[in-house]
Image (tube, rainbow, N blue to C red; front, side, top):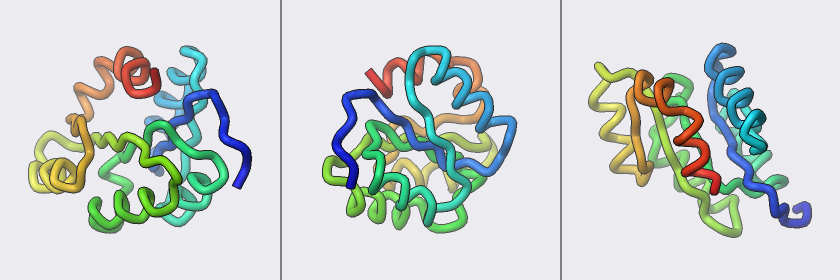
Length: 125
């Protein structure tokens, strides 16, 4: 494991290029490091090297139960990061599963897009 960084880091599990660019670009503009990864395996590997302050889950990219991903990442990190999630507002079961897994907040995509700069500041400050 690398030395702990003082810079807040967000890991983004997302396989959508538009969202990846939007979140990473906004984070960078605010002075935060956002590392996007397309799979849970890569997310876990990066979390071991670069301990995150926050893990952002795009629920459309999640191919395993959210609870399993959160448990796996908590085990991979010396200090448990904050978990947040966003997804389709019509997929209420998936949004609820993310809440039940410990993600807070869980947002519909529209709210994520609308408040992204403020949300990143809150999650990474």
